[in-house]
Amino acid sequence: MKRILISLVVSFSAISLMAQGMGPQAGSKSIALKFGRGVDYSDISYSQINNLSTSSTLSTPYTLADSNYGNNDVTNIIGIEAKYFVASNIAVSVSGSGVISNSPAQDLVEGYNNGDVAGSDIPTYNHVTGRSTKQFYVNLGGNYYFNVGSNRVFPYAGAEFNSVYGHMQVFDGYKGASNLDFFEPRNGEFYALGASAVGGIDYFVSEGLFIGLDIRVASYMYNVKSLVLQPGLEPQQAVTHNTSFFSYPSFKLGFMF
Image 1 (tube, helix red, strand yellow):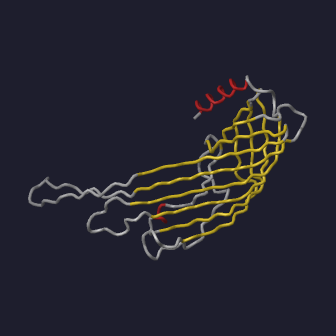
Image 2 (cartoon, helix red, strand yellow):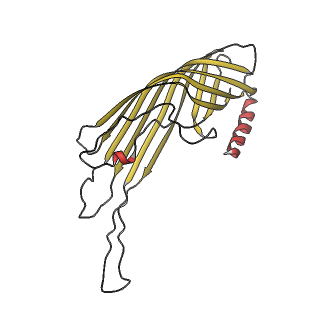
Image 3 (cartoon, rainbow, N blue to C red):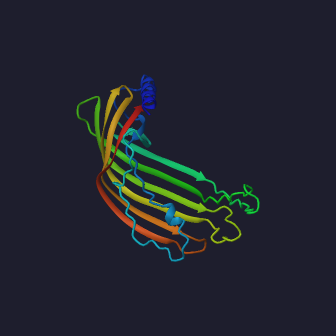
């Protein structure tokens, strides 16, 4: 990770030679990597989706908040942010990240038990349940930059529209002739919509190269989680409203051109 960060700094420094000057101007564009402790909004668990009991329920409302951080540290890349300056002190922004993963199912391989001949038994290989997951984060916003009389330090404040979408599907391979129930895929889906008041500061190390910090000063998210344990059934659904303050801090490394 340290080698990657050093390579990024060197690359950004080279690009900064073509920059327009220190700090934003009307028409400037910036691209930055964001680092921080990841926030897992999806809260879709494998054990819930793969609960095949007809009596399974969402027994307790799940909690989902900006403070639900993972265990990773500031070296973790959590997304990318792009800004366009419509004026020297006003910018529109878009940021986001995504994860797609797929673990294919494996069929049961039935063995053979020959008790008459020692060492001739063939073991049974159990089936493996497959899993497919998707998770996407998109934020749209605007920032106002304050003039503090410095050509390196640029504090800003603004607002963002935040959205998250997550989906998990669990599916079986062949489970054997004696266990043919529940072959249909099971699905869990999650989405969150909200808005945040944000604040931050950018510091220009050189022309075009900057580091920064930002935080969601106040944030509200409306979260909906649905589980469909068998096709054709009504989804089990849970809804959560979350309000947080001074959450989701992140470090930025970017360049402006």
